[in-house]
Length: 474
Image: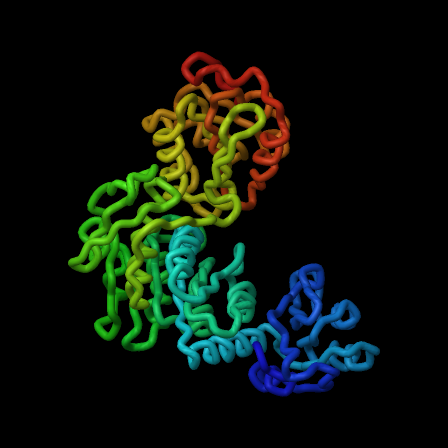
């Protein structure tokens, strides 16, 4: 919001300016926050009503902490205006709606200067695709992207407001938990390019069918203005009914406009290997810093989105992936940890298991927890993951949580079952040994980051017996 004085911020938000404060035009807030614990000096605090607390009640605290100003309901704004602090005070009966309006106004301000927005959704891989696309575009133009998990009706507008003036590409992630949410986010972001990475059974319990999940994801396509671009997987029939003739549609994957051709040698005789990609009749070569099959698929979606913005990427590509999304690290115990515990659904579980088995030089150990929100199909889907782990060649399996017991049932061989993340954090360090590659993955609500933390701190133990040789512990 560079250069926006309090009056302009209030107008953009549709709010009433009760007190200007001492802010000058050059002191516009660089970003907004909804949590006083995350509020930096000079930022705008937006007080939202939550399940347990009304954030507006902390307006005075925010001003005392050096906030540029506060945007809260009239009842809290009146009290804040009486506080002896220099910040501005803005009032709106619905601070969340005001936050949306403010973010939309800033997005349009960026657009006037040539900035364009890419919105990414999907059942799995959307965060990694966002990270890859941000790296691709960042090499060519000023680029901003959703940090961490700012992908909801609260997080997305905060991500937009954090984009600095001069941003030419803003890459936004959109989460979906029900019908209408993507439409709401698209109305705020007004994307120029919409990317649907895939359609899978995440949130199946909420939406009931893959067709309904596809329709919810396709709200992104519906929210694009005519002449915009839609990036979708090739040969995904669930999205076919939602495609539009007034959009440029770019497909990726086998048989698509953007497809993998094969491997490429690095330039100048360097180390590593690259990929050759067919790109709408042409060919490019990229040497990414990752090699997982699922992320190479995400790379194709990112390349297609970059193409939609008129950028053709080539050369070396280094990507810093978001935390807990497949990062590998060598532990003091001599094992390798694959920390992929941010979230899980049947699609991402299969991809992670395949990556584990294909890259483990020693034993492939899978620590798999509950996949949530799958509804009545959940037990069968968990059993299918167990069968997939067995067929893929997982050497040792540990399940965590009551639903994940079914993963063990599907696995069929010897395995260990632990009741929760706390138990797993106690037991796993003594079961993992040097040379193991350990995948830790579950839905976010399981909290398996505790297991990853415990493994990092451990010195190692005697290790699990090979899966075929030990009795199950259930």
